Amino acid sequence: MNFADNWARIFVVITFLTLGEAQVIGGLVSNLIAFGLFLGAIGYFALTGKMAEMFRWKKKK
Image (cartoon, rainbow, N blue to C red; front, side, top):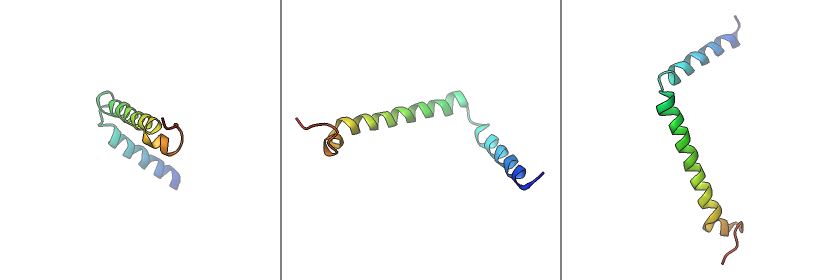
């Protein structure tokens, strides 16, 4: 067993300890969906509001 194998095993153990206790359906997935919607809302308002006018992505009326 070499040095890289030891670090790989430590990484796997830490990953399972941190994500193993998380409830995947109720916690992790729903948080990722909410985060995606949040980023989508920021993108929508950035492309349609004053920021779009400032960068000339949208022409002023």
